[in-house]
Length: 198
Length: 333
Image (cartoon, rainbow over all chains, first blue to last red; front, side, top):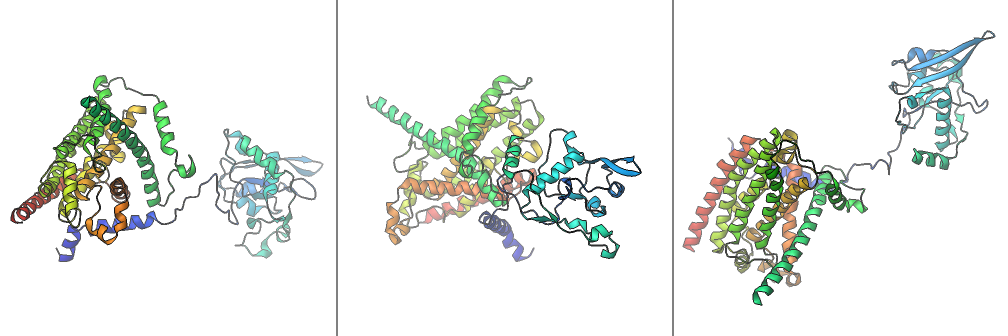
């Protein structure tokens, strides 16, 4: 054993080093975010609750029932119900099982008309599983709730134009997609009251 | 008439002591959670009251109203008396601890022996609870506690012999007075080895980390008090924190000069003499309590054989060496 090691052992140098470190930590700033009272900043490209974009001009969803999202979904949680009337496909219902979703946003990237979006809402926990299976009506309502809280005038989702693919290979509608003007249907105050009632 | 007067004064003093002690224990739990939290870059309790200041009160209320569960197969009488033994032993030690000049409930001549002896009785509470609970975890905790207490009480007692040799008295007030006669005002400097042994032994005696083997959360769930709940559970906690305060007070009195300030400091800064003794005493006790939390936030738990090795192979020889050196020094000066 070297002299250095002996001195280390007798005077407990390592323990004192540890004590010094913890003392330093004691006086440095804690990293805790006290969640219900303060929230961390949500960054661009956050993938939260699903919504179908309500077209500001027609007040309806933009889905054309092309089934691309259903095909690309890795967890197979998107179900589209279509009906053929007068040689025309009509989407009667659009269901996303959020309890099975893995939030990969492949559906958003695949959608040729930018009808689908993963919003920045993340507080939608529920006591029943049924509340987590969103139908078309609920998905449009999700968009209204999200749009009402959106502070800017226009909205554009990062995943609508997937950056890995050359823009010339995007569908035309995707290439020409403009940021959507926001229509605030629900007043924010009412929304807050609803949240506390839940 | 005189006897009644003496008894009345003792009762009043005890009541004041008791109230202050309970408040200290309650806020020691708060301080512990805050300090450990900030060491780990957390915030600790923040919700009840400003900065969580009312947390201990909320905890007490919760513990009192919790259901007191007694398992079917326990030894009922022993199960019920065990926390009382722990608590009574921990509380009784404070009878002889002086917090200021003439501020002591019982100024007896064998104060130091009394404190060590009574602190030893507290072990019975732990062993009884481990035995009566009829549970493996509790029993293991009780066994470990017995072995640990026996090993470390030796080191604790021996480390104080140096102080006794220096002060030539067992009386705690006398020990403090002797220290204030020295120009540096503390036995800490000549008895540094004794102080080191005392600090390590006091951690082990109060079952605190890094020597908390009797209640090791990760191995024994909660050790000897797994089966306890509600108010009985809190009595054990109370006893543990009281023991911490007792050991801190003992360290303050025996090594840090109690309520006195080193004369050299007063000479340098005469203003320090104005501050009442109780403030100095409490400051020194708080430092030791902080040391408990600080060490808990820093060191991991020792293994059982390491614990025994430290006790018997390092601390006791060190304490004996300290006694020999002190005796030789005292004999020739």
